[in-house]
Length: 627
Image 1 (spheres, helix red, strand yellow):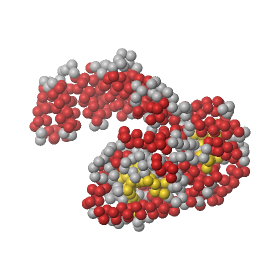
Image 2 (cartoon, rainbow, N blue to C red; image 1 turned 60 degrees about the vertical axis):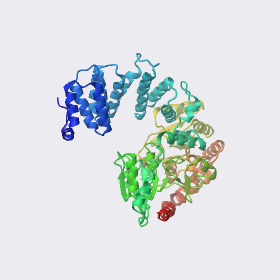
Image 3 (cartoon, rainbow, N blue to C red; image 1 turned 120 degrees about the vertical axis):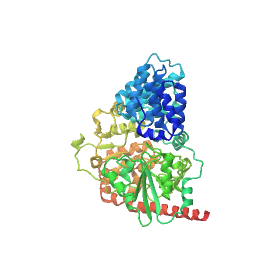
Image 4 (cartoon, one colour; image 1 turned 180 degrees about the vertical axis):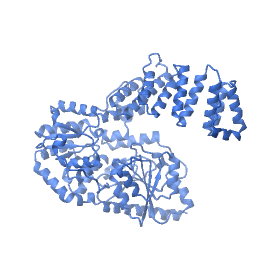
């Protein structure tokens, strides 16, 4: 059967050499080595579809003991073109010809995953890592087994089957200790499950390997040492971020068109949707002075169909979609737009695209909100801060220079939709109990802080702790630690996830929010104070551990900032035993909180604009002087 498609026929009509290849492939006389050589040449020339047709014709017309190898190569090409259903069929053919062809089975699993057939994908990979006939002493074979284990663990984690995922990570690390990516996921998945201690030995993996392999996000919860946080960022940059040595892209664009007119601010993010960053920033975009600034969104955010997403896009003068656009092309789009200041709202958080920044598409590139701390990215020179979150002693551990705002670093939204006021009974809260709460994500919890909470409950009779439980394993582990402190299970009350309006409304039911350390509440702290509930925080040495302290200073409640575990614990007990003091805080927040500097968003935007304008105009003058 002729496997040439109409589109390919058009390209072959002007290329006799390709037609000759196909004729030979149909003859059944082409050697596999010749087929592979010709197909590789086509791929190097960018003719991947032609290479696919070549393989299709060869596999249809050729009888060979190596047919399964050709099928495997064809499957790889089809997968690279996102033709996953076809790739699935050809890998199945390869396995029918050679049932022990492990590489084909691994790739079949990937095609099934792309097709959304999760259990089938896991089944193919399980067949590999459970196969007793595979010689794991052979390094090449071991890599195939590890591939099956690690991809199964990855997929299970995305399916929130955390315990199964962790078990496979442990199995993988037992087989081979030096696997940085696996160590990174192993540490963080234990944090997600509150599986303490997080740094638990496995196989020959040393404590040092666990520490060095910790991702930056996980390190923000694991340690308040700014040197370790910087190390984690630098390791990521060293391993994942390109070193761009050519002339910065913004200079090439500037050489063609001098910057003039309104200052162009570009916001770079994949989180301009229903996400913490997307919840904080709409008013920032809306309140920019359009007489002086032109605002761009360069984003690859998911189109979640929410009103939040629509509002953010409406606030932009220009929206440039970067989903599906490679990093270099994305950087060129930013440079060609003549952006003066590119504000990175992502940092090194999930979904980040730091290589866009590495090309330096804008002359001024600034980190803000997404990563409260240093990213060590070579393309980012500045970070938005205030003098509380970035005191002088913290600066040596940052690769960015601070742009200090006079009050608080954080912008937030005053148009948050709040649901109907709930009652305690709705959430299973005792009517007359003192209710401590912490609605931070579970990966921010650690054993030191959670144990402190249990000691607080022991000292405040009748009090309860109201928490989020992201998953069943986190809940079980928290209950285990509570039992070790002789805290009854009924004193821990777990709140379900809720839509943002209902989530905001329920803050009013709590008496005191207990912050996490070293990873403080950020957006959650803003929500808490906006809704009039006091928050007790502990501030440390790093930006991330001083976020809530910055908010409390700006809202006018600095006495709720502590600087040691003992002070934090003692203050929490004192307040739990003195409900009248809590009521005075709530009254203050009701009457003065929303008019405080923390929520004076027009002033925050003006302060940002003042700094952006000063920097951009200085940059333009420098460009003109050097032209």
